[in-house]
Amino acid sequence: MIALISVHDKTGVQEFARSLAELGFDIYSTGGTQKHLRDGGVAVQSVSTLTGFPEILGGRVKTLHPMVHGGILARRDRPEQMEELARSEIPPIDIVCVNLYPFVETVAKPDVSLDDALENIDIGGPTMLRAAAKNYPFVLVLVDPSDYAQALDHLRAEAVPLEFRRRLAEKAFQHVASYDTAIAQYLRSDEHGEESFPERMTVALDKALDLRYGENPHQRAALYREERVGQGDGGIVAAEKLHGLELSYINVMDADAAWQAVSEFSDPAVVILKHANPCGIASHDDIAEAYRRAFDSDQMSPFGGIVAANRAVTAAMAAAMKGMRYDVTVAPDYEAAALERLRKRRDLRILRMPEGETAPALDYRRVSGGLLVQEADLRPDDGLELRVVTKRAPTAAELVDLRFAWKAAKHVKSNAIVIAKERATVGIGGGQQNRKTPVELALRLAGEKAKGGVLASDAFFPFARDDAVEMACRAGVTAIIQPGGAVRDEEAIEVCDEYGVAMVFTGERHFRH
Image 1 (cartoon, helix red, strand yellow):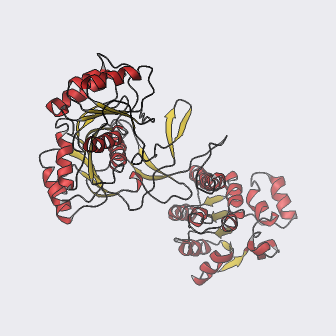
Image 2: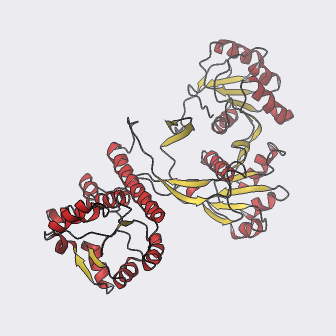
Image 3: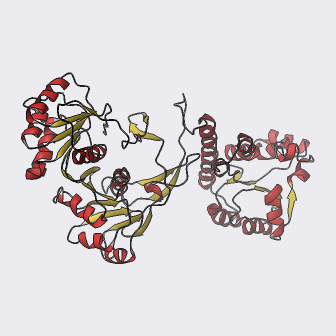
């Protein structure tokens, strides 16, 4: 019996090979794996002794040989194939244990050259894995060290179930598919790391964890990490859970939405979010005060929601959260006293975000039979040139609030309306089928606070007089920011001029469906 072992991930491979040898397997290997096994006291032979041919082209060709692939691919239930092996003196290979060169890690290095990248594309490994997986009823194929123990148990029992073999074959094909996906991503990225929209595209996913349940308790769910060339672990998938129950699908989805929203702001900020929609956003030099102002935006909706901060959660902020039940907090860090206080809440999941995270280059949205793919809405708004279209220009204070409200509106479901004052939302309306209703909702939440506030709309106003714009003006809003571009833009401008309200156009919209 022959086992061929050639692995980049050498976790447990010495013990595995030693156990195979005890079961009577002859071990063959190549390069670094051969040395590693020999250093571990395993009797191992070079693949070259099996093929009768030396490695060539600096190691580029080692296992691409009929002595290897004939031994892997021959069907044991076909006498003519086994006779052909015997005539050619090719021994059957029973186990193929292979995992691949670290291509993703190599091309993630900042100084990697194209030549280095190409040299780290494994050829022999994927070929052996595909051959062994194709012939899985007769050849045991292993890519994951976590499967070694179970494989040994079956081998010792002299009965390896076909279903177990099939599962290992599926893992092998998926391993190769993910590897090829990374190579394709690298080759289609330009010198700036930007990708095109190719005619064919695969996405590689690695399971991060099983979730408590899906959107509802009867739905199973899991969280997957997207494997992307040139991007390390980042985003909500890489968050460290410091405390709390297992995460559910909604916990992860809402925590991500809250974190993306709060990351929009360079100044200290807090976002309180419920059902993927912010109910309060505020920015203040004191993160505890930012929380209080965000909470004051809507004191009813936060129950069971998410709190995200873009600065470390302080003891004062944790104290300010007293009396309100939250499902998740997410922040880059926590003061020791804050963490001690928050950990007393059994149901609260506490997430700490990694440093240096990168935002996704592409957004995916599932539709029946496929995926919608778009670039992420990552264009920074700080330097956005605003065009004043009314007789009155906004004051410096209004301009600060307008830019704040515009960033906030970007993270509210369309149709989105945000009313803000002193870098804090006082009313939010979103997710409606028209633009008038979210204005009504935002004004109702704001109440008297709308007076002297500013309003942001994620898209233009189709109607103005006796509609959304005039409603806002009547309520005391003093400045409005919107993309512009409607047929009735002039009507909206006229209404604002009548009320002395300043209006600016961004020339861009921020739909979020």
